[in-house]
Image (cartoon, rainbow, N blue to C red; front, side, top):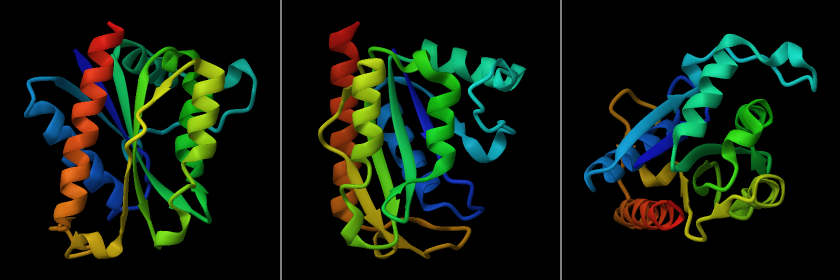
Length: 178
């Protein structure tokens, strides 16, 4: 089994990257392979609706997602929605998401936008028949130690527990769909 983990923020001191690393550790500690995809390391074009956006890098990323049994998306929430980089990856890689369980880890500025991930979740369910893990992680700046510093980590025990629960649910669903 293989779980792809997308770190969707482009920020140099990304909170969602920290969430991605924590879920990667949780999944690996359960004996499951992971493939961490940090969008900061990829030069992806904006989706234009044409074949011009199917670059070699996009095709390689599509194959990595297609090979995954499940996908965890660690995304920042900007202005009450998932950031554009994550939506762009979904647009670029499309059918590679089909019929996979998908879990979400959200890093946000405040507690008010906890439902923001639902637009993307609904799109994945309707467009690609993804099975959305109903337990997701939602963290704000106060949940991180040394926020925006090189040694930043998840400090909140509640968030760590939710990451573990998400990892368990994603692995269980990926195994059941196999």
